[in-house]
Image 1: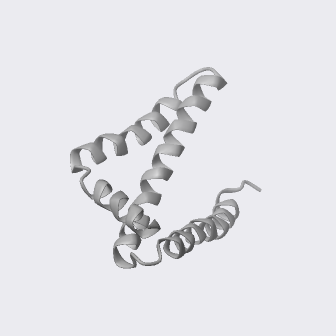
Image 2: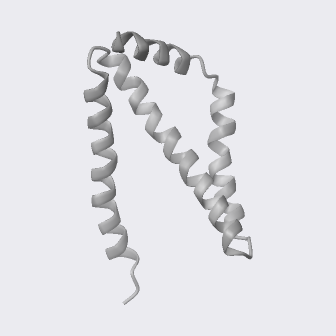
Length: 104
């Protein structure tokens, strides 16, 4: 029963058009650019939160969708491995960014 629900989600995600994905994918970078020009902290915070959540959601759902297509009988395992990859990449690349861009 649970697998059938995921198949319905996969079918509905695959029907999203390229134009719609391009429109929503361009909102994030536009909001990041706008957030660099605002003068108050609250407006910066709103722009940054929406840009981050939109970008993170789009980059997470692509691998999850294709993982569900490749292994439809174990969607929870696929989602867990992909989520672990997202977390582990933050562990690695945050340390690289701190070491590279921190002023001494």
